[in-house]
Image 1 (cartoon, rainbow, N blue to C red):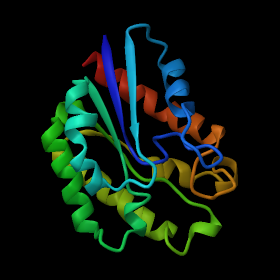
Image 2: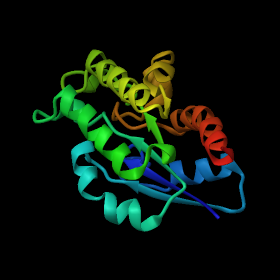
Image 3: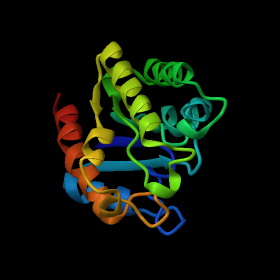
Image 4: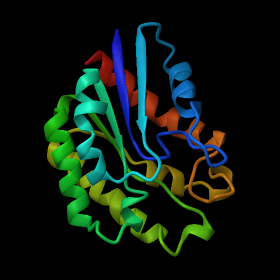
Length: 187
């Protein structure tokens, strides 16, 4: 049995119309099309990378996963206490505690026009670059979701709240995430 933990915030939790949903998990399971697969979604709306460190034991270690996707940044960008350096340190600590061979980092994505005051694209891009920097430093697989999402119109990927992804947004994310997961499962 292959076990994958999806660790993140409301985007990982699959928030649709303001409420967590199984959409992301179900779409990912269908796309992977593996009978011996368990997906455990540990997305927490409003979560930050530093908060996730406090729940690693309960949400990751007890599950004993083969792979952990780490998908933060969208809330960290808007948090006054989170600096770019502390964000990178939090990711590094997660990777060290989980084990680099199990981890896949996903950069934060984009937001729409109504979210630019607290989550501007330029700052999200900085956090995406910081996520890549950590992945390269730790020599782990990563998905540059920011770059992929930025190439599309926000209204085609985002729900009306301008922060959470629509079904089309999740489809695009999964299209790029599945090959990385398959490769890691076969390595």
